[in-house]
Image 1 (cartoon, rainbow, N blue to C red):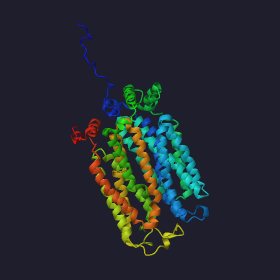
Image 2 (cartoon, one colour; image 1 turned 135 degrees about the vertical axis):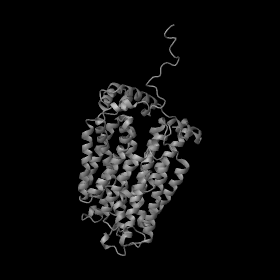
Image 3 (cartoon, rainbow, N blue to C red; image 1 turned 120 degrees about the vertical axis):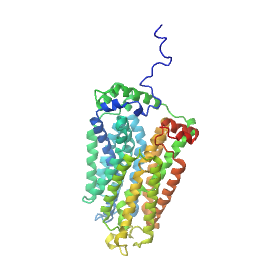
Image 4 (cartoon, helix red, strand yellow; image 1 turned 90 degrees about the horizontal axis):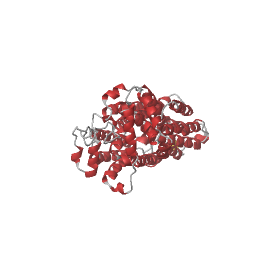
Length: 512
């Protein structure tokens, strides 16, 4: 009999065949993962996440600096309340611009070069702030460092996910947020010893280290394939995985994935519930995440502690909160795949609600220097804490510290990291680029509005008002989670897609 007749009609299954190419963990078997060499991969990931370290450092730079500028001996640097609000908020405006431009930079320059490019505005921004002779230099420096932070926040997770293999992708995927939190903690710690100018100088160190290390790191294989540089992509995979591994198999899978992702979404397809429902959920989650108050709390943390008369020094309180935030992020990274997404979102929103409500009520019922101000305000500036009278005393003054610690802990457990995770799980592949840009824009514009008007609202209505508002939003987060957010833990992309196409919850039952 002819040998060709004996062949199956569909042919032998190909190792390159894959229904959902983005889930490469199901194609790379355990034997392949065991043969991989990770040292160079870890080095490349470390070089990249230094950008996230700098982002976290720059975001909270204002926390110890604003109190110092309020009592500055240089008239041109003695900051007013309106200038404080701009100093705290202009960073987020720059981050919004940086996040949007990263969408273009990632496709034109590549992920690695985009991260390296961010070092230029970051270094210039720190130079402006460190040598500032007027408030305008401080504002320009914050805007530039914010722009750099927006670029890195959008580029680094993409770079890490594209150079990683399934065996370590989950662990490395949590590194950007961990490094951002570590950067904030280092800023708080250095603020105990260094002046505000030297804090800006210290910010140059991770920026320069990052750009030097990245000069020796490869570009993303996925980006190289998308530009037709397949030979170079094979060489990068050989360098990252080791020469004695079956990296050619992974290359074929990435190549097929790039081909699938090249399909563009049309305007007519946006009307499909499969497209607009997950996009709407992702955008609303980013909007509610910022409305919970995390950015203004981090930006003005030391000033908030100063105004609530905590028993410890405000700078020590800020460092303690930074440490709690880091520990919480580490706990969330290891527990996210064990507990469900929704249960963590429920717990996170519940803790944030209780914390904001407690802090708002504490401020409202505790005797402060002024009933409608966080701090005593004279001629638009803040009076030093030594001049305040009728302050609460005793261990009750630990309430603001404990409440803030719990808020940060709750945020880091759920609404901080899970909003990003769910965005990658529920967004349809061909709409991911547009939807991610929209999420970045909504997130940072919301953060800008909150940080811009936080101090002004405090001055006119009192510190308790924003915290009670944040509490109401966190209560709304509970309702939103229960009504709109699907549970994606243990669900395949097929089940998630079918759920959004049909709206039938039976597709979201875990059959694994």
